Image (cartoon, rainbow, N blue to C red; front, side, top):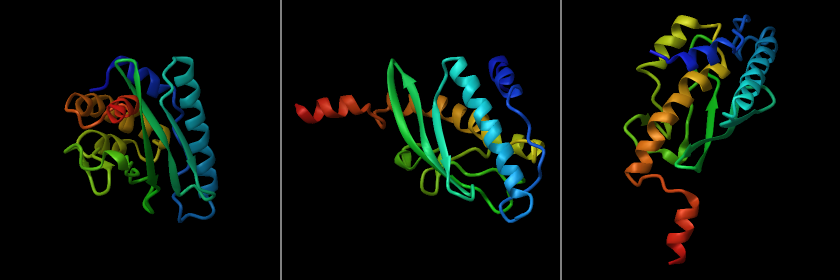
Length: 171
């Protein structure tokens, strides 16, 4: 179960109202507008809490999203590229977030760097579709995944900070 801070943060993300996916040409622009509003609200609340940890942008029609996410561990910032496509069955189906540079480094990942969210996040999304959106995906999917996996990957030596990689290469 989520901790109280997570519940409080997620409760401040607006729930979405429009039940439309990319194939619904009439309602998709309205859904996309709601998605952007929720993402903006989530980013604003993260910045206010000094917890800024991702950037996202989409293609013109809002079906392909790319960006970066980062995790601070022992005062070092580890930054990763992220990407996902909006499934045709969205919002009934959550997007599959991929962090390609971590592909093959953890068992909680599959098919080209897509993070595994089936155990905990997928049932939560299913219960809350179509009210959940991309901000919820980031808050309840990618954020917790990074918090668990990145420190573990660092401790195993599978992820090395860029400065330490340069230091090792210089030696």
